Image (cartoon, rainbow, N blue to C red):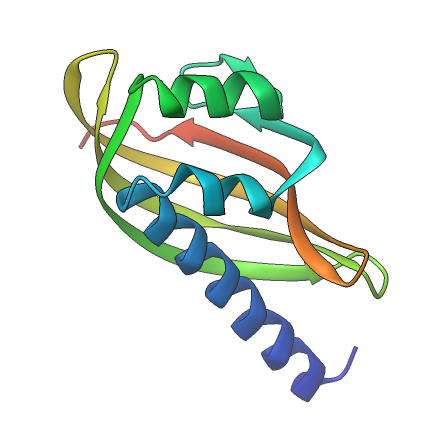
Length: 131
């Protein structure tokens, strides 16, 4: 890819991720569900893994309540023309299982264009050590 294409891909990744985080904070589960691929694998910083149905059930049931999030993407890599991987960090305040937590994690996401729409295919966060 050339520099202009790299810049556009980075901007797309930032837009998609900020949109995803906004929907999470707004608890807009129905619109959030539309972002997820049917094949999504969602790996939490705790090590637990969800598919689309199990993640959405937990989100609807209030297992996760998102309060704030600050994203910093570091690198975006094209995976052909219809997919990309993005890495970076995210700081988030969330109530998880009834406990308010401040999460500072490494982030890896994979987005794939499906029938003309970008959908989240893979998500993994890894907790960073507390400083």
